[in-house]
Image (cartoon, rainbow, N blue to C red):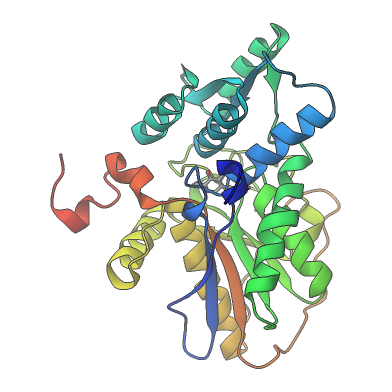
Length: 328
Ligand SMILES: Cc1ncc(COP(=O)(O)O)c(C=O)c1O
């Protein structure tokens, strides 16, 4: 028996349909208690603030988020007895707002993107709330280093991953998992995935895109760009089609960033199997250097990725409307 719902954090690694002669495997993060990967950094950032004496009983937590971190912090706040105040762009899905309120947290909706939400959260912090700052807080990538990455190592059952391919928001997931896996497998590629319409890591100007959770439009301080072998871009329409395929053909219901990451992971796996150039773009950050190509794989290529949340969080966006014929 666990003492707290926060002790149930963890997820399976599942082999998904993969290009011939390869294995693509994904962490199904919707299995966490708050339904996404962000339960991990939420718990870790609350614990770190408590340990530093910055968060005490009676304090209120504030955080700007596109949604899943808000749910994770609302879960951690409810389980630990803190008031939680989430600042969110009004464009994010209704399910996220309802979920956050269901856990008893307050929501402040702002017009604009995550940058506007950050400004509002800074204002509330200056009035005495405790901001966890997922874009800068080292406890975010550390949570993925200590849990997501560690679990993957165990779940790989002795197989050697050739590449980690996954989307980037705060960069916590790719940085934490990438650091842990690279320690064990120094040759492994780490590949970021970003929205084609907002490809800041590839050097494009920041722009608008409709991806929820990935592609913040700036290079997050929590993204360790030195880990990256390169970047792949995915169109939203392709990511959403991949979500529908995963649901229909594999029984796995996930959101846009997971669909995008899966497409990119499959592309990398296929090129490793065929000996083709996977087509990584250089990372457009000063000082970034590509690593020498690791070369041949050890037998059948293995590519790991992350599915951050469930497609249930996207029903109101119409993501699955093409499946059910119900546009209401
Ligand atoms: C749905 C979704 N996908 C991807 C990400 C990116 O994860 P990270 O912030 O660890 O880079 C997030 C983060 O909030 C998310 O909510």
